Amino acid sequence: MTALDLVVMAAGKGTRMKSRLPKVLHRLAGRALIQHVIDTAAGLQARRVVVITGHGAEEVEGALTLSAQLAGTAVPAFARQEPQLGTGHAVQQAVPLLEDDGVTLILNGDVPLIGEPTLRELIASCAGRNLALLTVDMPDPTGYGRIVRSGDKVRAIVEHKDASAEQRRIHEIYTGVMAVPTPLLKRWLARLTNDNVQGEYYLTDIVKLAVADGCGVAAVKTADRIEVDGVNSPVQLAELERAYQLRQARILMEQGVRIVDPARFDVRGRLQCAQDVEIDINCVFEGEVSLGEGVSIGPNCVIANASIADGAVIHAFTHIDGKKAGVKVGARALVGPFARLRPGADLGPDVHIGNFVEVKNSTLARGAKANHLAYIGDSEVGERVNYGAGSITANYDGANKLRTVIEADVHVGSNCVLVAPVTVGRGGTVGAGSVITRDTPPQALSIARGKQVSIANWQRPAKGAGRSK
Image (tube, rainbow, N blue to C red; front, side):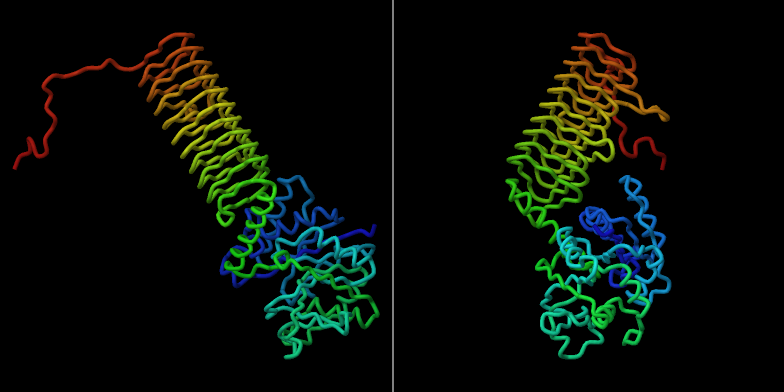
């Protein structure tokens, strides 16, 4: 196999985005536009990835470096284009980083949905000897370079501003993606001139040079316009986001997932679903999420980095955020509405977490229940525990996070505070309103609160009473 090197164009300012953020760092489905391109290209097992930066170079390079480090992958090489004198000039900056024994695949950092099968077809058409171009038919080709043919043979790419009236009627356009033998690419780049309306060095001019040199020029036409759509404005970004999400929804529905409204559904990572999963409207899935058989997700939920087992029900407006530690929800568990599961929450089978209950870095064993207005943090909660409304574990002493252990079959009354580190013994009961600071024995009723006092005939202060005029 011929060695493959990738060059990703990411130097543009993206003026129409009207943002201080470099265009290629704007997000689609939770990832930077350019990260989509790099992640897709990773499947091609390229020898080297070179990213050409310019506007916001330090920010783009920093973001890609951090992303690679977090993923444990190789950091791309970077080539700066300063000043920016056209696409041909951009690729010229990568030349010192490209070896002569391979094929160079040129991609655009603002075309996020390019597919790996399409790229493989393009590389195959290059075959180590041809200039291979990816093209598409556009209903409105305004602004794009036109593919000029003689019969079926590609003769040139003419940029819109340089095109004649006849050439502007051509609907086949160049997508900005090409595969080219690296020695030929270097030769043609050295011969580029800026004799055009823009006064720039066009990469597309290498087509004429290839034809003049008798090199084969292959055009691979994709029928999928979405995968070659670029992002130049917030409107285009939103349109591409929705197109992407509708595709994800369709894939899942074809696997049997019931999605109430595909137009109100977002995956910003990877979502895996077993059989008979139901997802209501306005749900967002981030990071790595898996839903077991028969799981039901209510409307307006946000779920990130979580594993939800068979038969669990996540009611409306629940927020599950696993981050690095992840969240686990056991089989047949009921969560929400308006519940919050934070990193490290691990719910066993048949656990109930109700409205306005927050769980963080805690395990709840089979059948435990916290149904109302409660906080469980840094805790181990045993089987069949009933955790009362308004109760909390006080897990932070101002410097350290401390553990609370609530053993099986404990009943914690309403409005209790369990001050960690503390253990509530098996089968015990904590009286409502108690502040528990010491371990309690099994089967005991533990009460820690002030004695109730009633003052007879007490008069409530009245407004204005006792004031001097």
